[in-house]
Image (cartoon, rainbow, N blue to C red; front, side, top):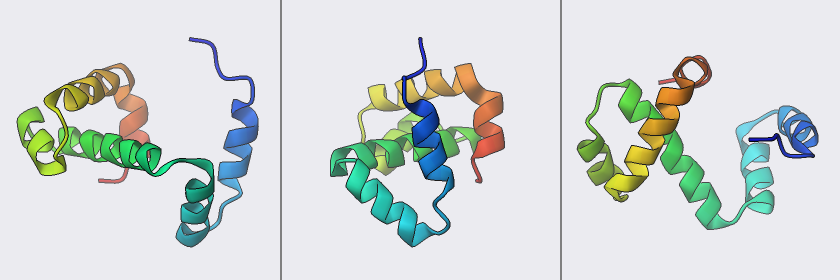
Length: 89
């Protein structure tokens, strides 16, 4: 999959954010509530899987479809080393 044309600009803007409040404000402006929720769920799915939780337990805890967790697990398998380096449990 090709990288988005303006990915470098997005990354640059994200790196400039210095604190949680400013990041929240940036995300509120940039993303819809649904997109923020989806990203939040993806992060919690990764954390749960890395902590050894079952996909069913994660699905129930987050109140998301098991398919959502399965897709997150597939992404984690493809990118596990990167995810482990980037996510704080």
